[in-house]
Amino acid sequence: MRIRFRENASVAIDLPQGAGLRVNGAEQRLERAKLALCRCGYSSNKPFCDGTHKRVGFEAGAGEIELTELGPGGEGH
Image (cartoon, rainbow, N blue to C red; front, top):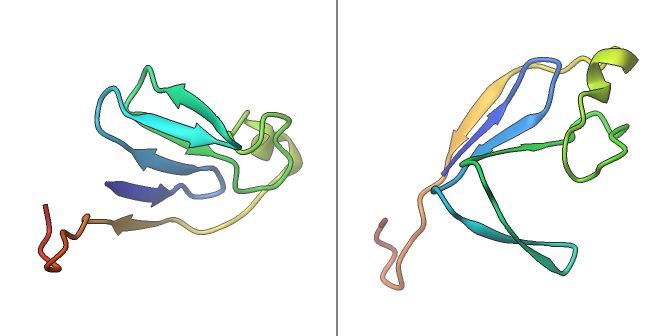
């Protein structure tokens, strides 16, 4: 799984196609393999990004993290 911090924007998470999530106790199936989470704190659809960062002038640097799931023996899948 890859997590990208978009410059002056949201946190983008690349997930497997058809992945399911539990958000605030409610299960959700994703239609797309990308998820955009609010990073500015002003979204009216938290935890998801609604584009408000553009209006409020949110500024933050870009970055990326690659996550690998570890098995019981510590080996990556």
